[in-house]
Amino acid sequence: MLTKSNLFVRLLILGLAFVSAPSQAVMITIDADSYDAGSLLTGSLSHVNLTNGFRENVYASEFNCRDHAAPTGTRVFGLKPTAGCHGWASQTGGPFPTRPSSSALVGAFTDPVSLIEIDLLNFGYPAMFFAEYSLYDANYALISRGTANTPLGQAVRLTLTGANISYFDIGGFDSIAAIAVDRLSFEVPEPSTFSMILLALVGALAIGRRKFKPANS
Image (cartoon, rainbow, N blue to C red):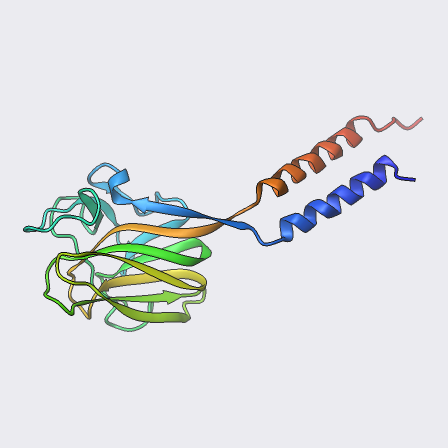
C-alpha cells in the first residue's frame, strides 16, 4: 500500500536524482557598453571577477584611440576609468599567478566554466600580430595556452574551451599592450526547470506533513 510517507520518500529520491543529473547551461555576457563610462567592474560582476595581473581594478572605459573603434559600442575593459587607448598585454613573466605582468586581463570565475568567448581588437600593430591567452584550473594548473591572429583594426571573436576553467588571462603578444577587450561571454550551469519544480513539490509535501502531524496524546 502506498502511504503518504512512502510517497514522500519516493518523491524525495526522485527529486535528488534529477538534481544530481547534468544541468543545462546558460550563456552569460559581460559587455562594457552595458555600464556607464568609468564604472568600476572589479568586484561588481556576477559569476566572474576581472582584474589585471597585479589584481588591480578594471573599468568600463571609453575607447578613444586614433582611427579605431571598439569592437562593439564605444566602451572596452580598461585599466583606467578615463577615455583613451585601453589595451592589454600577455603574462610575460610565466604562468599566472606566480610572476604576472601588470597588463594582462585576468578573469576569475566563481564556478568553473567550459566555454569562453572574448571580443578583441588589435589597435596598434600591423598584420600577423597575435593575442596570447592562457586557461587555468582552480589550482592554477595550466589547462591550455595559445595565440590568435588579430589583424590591425579588425574585431575578432575568440572562442576558448576546456574542462573546469577557473581562470584566464589574455593580452597582446609578449608585452605589447595593443589588444582591446570589449565583451566577455561564458557558460554557467543552470538547474533544469523540472528539477526546480520537483524540489518545490517535495518541500511543500514536507511542510504539509509537519503541519498536519497529529499531536502526541
